[in-house]
Each structure stands twice: as C-alpha cells, then as structure tokens.
Length: 174
Length: 174
Image (cartoon, rainbow over all chains, first blue to last red; front, top):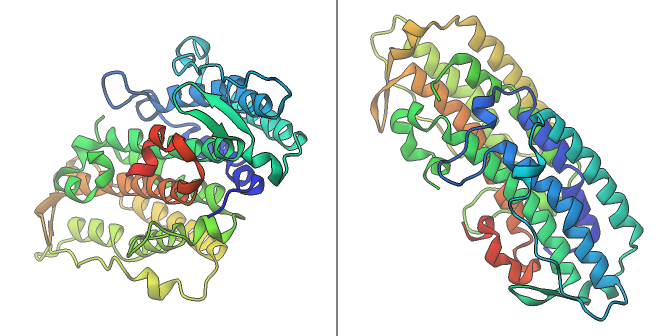
C-alpha cells in the first residue's frame, strides 16, 4: 500500500477513541500492570503517545518543510511520560490524548502537504536522512504498534489463568 | 491477576465497539489486505470472532456446566468465516458481531457461574481436561489477541513506506 496523507490521517484520527473504548472504566489490574521489568503498562503508553504528539511528530514534519538549513531532529524522550503523567488518572490521560491528537490533525492538515513534499528530507540521529512521507507513515504505524502492545500487555495479565490454551495464544508468548 | 467472571466480561463486552472504532469507514486497503499467504485480514478476523461466539465459547461453557456425562468439546472450525462472511460488508460484520456478542454476554450472565464452578471440567480435543475458568479466561485473551493481530496486519500495509524506521517498529517484524 502506498503512503498518502489521507491514509495516515485515517489511522491517526481514530486512535484516541479506540484506546478510550479499550481502556475506559477497566480495573487497574488491566491497565496499570505491565509485562515485568522495565516494560510499560497501558497507562504508560498513553502518556508516551501524548508526549509524541506534543514534542515530536509534527515538530519534525515542520522542520522538514521549513527553510531551516539545519534539518537535524531533536532526540525524542521515550521516558517523559513517567514525569508528565504523575498524579493523573488514566481517564484524564485519555481525555488529554484526545485533545492533543485533535489539535495535531488540524495542524497536520494546515501544512497542506503535497506529493512534492513527500520526498523532502530531515536528519534523524540514528538513521541520517529520512523523508517526510516516511515520517508520516511511521506515525500511523507507531499508533498501531502501541494499540497492539496494549492488547498484548493486557492479555498477559491472564497468562497464568488460561491453562493449556497458552499453546494456542501466540500473544502470550511474545 | 486472578481470573474472575467480572474481569472477563469487562474485556468481552468492549471488543465489538473497539473493533468498530478501529475499522469502520477505513479504506479497504487497510481492512481487506493481509500479511500474505494464508494469513487473515481484519475482515476475516471479524468473521472468525462471530463464528466463535455463535458456536464455540458458550457452547463449551454450557457443556461443562451440564449434566452430560460426555464432556468432549466439538472441534472449532477456524475457517468457517470464509463461507459465512461471503457477500457481507465489513460494516455488516461489525454490526453482526455487536449483536452476537451482546447476546453472548447475556447468556453468560444467565449461567450464574460461581467460584465453585470454576474448577469444573470439559474435555478438549488437543489438551484433554480443561477447567471452566481457563475457558473463560481464554475467551478474553483470544479477543485481545485478535485486536493485537488486526493492528499488526494493518501496520504491515505500510511496511514499505516507513523507510529506516522499520528498525524501531517491532510490529513490522513479527
């Protein structure tokens, strides 16, 4: 499937409500537990998605489209949510993500990105040159990756309860 | 986390609306494509979930709770959806799943399952003896597994569009 702005927006604009329907009102055993060690809970992931929208995806897109000579991206803080989410309920975070994402979609549309812009370049710390189209495809895949992760993290809370069926449930073995 | 009827229902009752919000109105490139070969699209998965509710989970639970001496489960047809979904739109399937699941929850609640019932036994074709609690934990995990799968299958449609970011997107390498 070829990248288009429309196809990315189709995913990006639905993620907050998908996560709200998946998580709202669940007991904290489903939403605050994680996969052990340094892994993230559903709660942690929502904070991470908020921080990405606030500081990363569009800031990078705008830098690519700008007249700046220096196209180097700022590094993204993958752990900011542990500070930013403090004291907030999951419901508050889900509401915040909805607002932040809605603003992101407006800001993305206002950039009036054309096919000619797709090839424009930014400089990623690890990868070097990356294209605007790659950034905006990655944003949508990143959403889907975290939806998938949240479903997996939740599933694992029942890992010891499914008995022999664990053999058929690939998600519990990832 | 320990199994409870309430915790399983908490997942089971939200799956149809989660999938509706995730899939409704998307272009068919997101919903009809799969991961290649014999793998399933999002559309295929919804048909599979409908068939499970209609023929499998509760039928097995009721057999376990029944006075039948023979507790052997019927095998589940993992490919029934390819026939049953024929001619239906994704939106029709999502609506059907909503109705079927809502009926399932009612039927499950009407069984008035107690903690004493959790240990009751059915006989699985592959595993032999399995407990009612394991069946009802597996039902919820099975939902989450397929939510995770659908997000992955969709993400993969953009696999060639993310460029070097594929390195950071675990979902594209599963």
